[in-house]
Image (cartoon, rainbow, N blue to C red; front, side, top):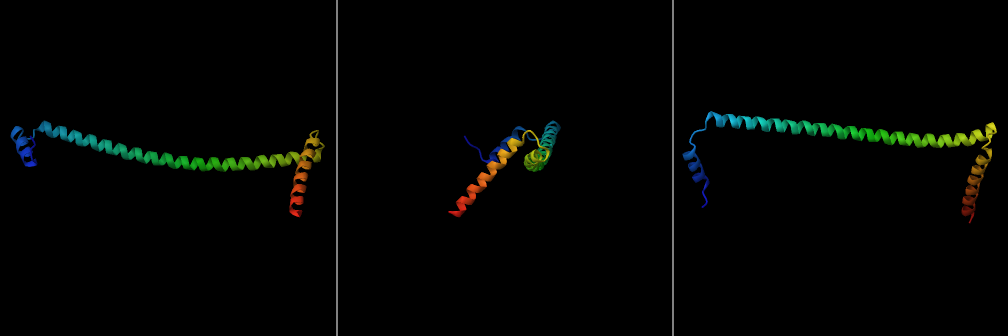
Length: 115
């Protein structure tokens, strides 16, 4: 058996015609709980946005530092090669081999261009 809205309202009012103070108190507590829940949700959303912003900033910093590190690593390798010739380092032979390899690669590129 189904009831229309009007029938349901009439039926409810016949069973419990007046809202008691206890009912009102429960409704107020429920409203208060919902408000706290909504406030908590908004606070959590704000915190999440802040964390995401901080994550993005830190990722950018990491990328920048990695680029700096790679540039410094290349510079260090170049300085090692230069120092090998200036100071007569025992690793002079390794530096000469590296330079000879680079010269051969350049010669190969020139040969390809001349074809």
